[in-house]
Amino acid sequence: MEDSTQTILFYVTFMSMMLFFFICSALIEKHKPSVGHETTYTILAGIALSVLLFYSTPRAPQTAGTFTFKPNFFFNFFLPPIVFNSGFNMRKKMFFKNLGNIAVFGLCVTLVCFVLYGLGGYIATKKMGLMAYDYRLDNLTPGTLYELPLSSVTFMQVLLYAALLCSSDVVSAVSIVDYTQQPKLFSCIFGEGVTNDIVSIILFNTVEHLQSVSFVWYTPFVIIA
Image 1: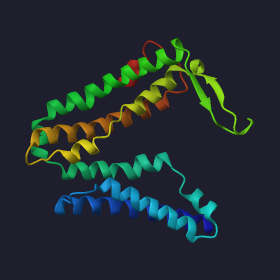
Image 2 (image 1 turned 90 degrees about the vertical axis):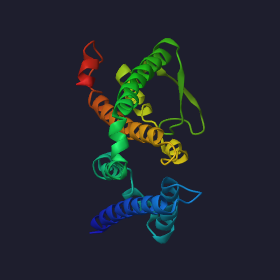
Image 3 (image 1 turned 30 degrees about the vertical axis):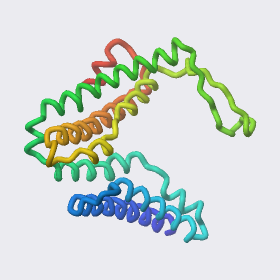
Image 4 (image 1 turned 135 degrees about the vertical axis):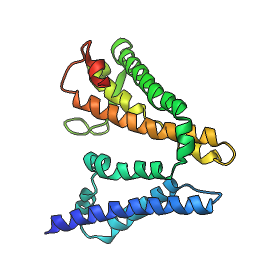
């Protein structure tokens, strides 16, 4: 019974945060305040809610465990409404008018960055002998810094990290560009950001499902397919 209550609390909290984000977006779009962005307000609300939940229950560790990040829930239920909301509220006429530029930056450039990051990561880990540092305390001496060679990292793991790096954040760029003064630039930046996020998510999920196999000559074609 207690687990069911915590699960309900988890979903209600996430849905409330999503509604808060949408309401902030609508209010900012309508009133256009000189300071702040919906992302900033949502982060501040999340911090306040976390503090409230932590100190308002005598079983803080158990409640904190309820809000453990769940990737499947995030990608399947939390992220799509945000992307769909952005698509619904965008200036569709300018978006499709500049679809060629958006495709070049959002699709082609993302794939180029994926290839460059992958090759750069491979060279850094396999050819340059870079080291990583491990702070884990299990089976290790607390407070000791351990050097770990990155040469043991597989190329598929490097590609997974490269797919993660391909996702760029255009919130700052979009917030400083006025649509009424520069509609083409605004549409290109906004469209590139949405397309880039979609392509990066697909790349990440694709490479993640291929982690159990080794990289061979036809693996790029599998990823593209």
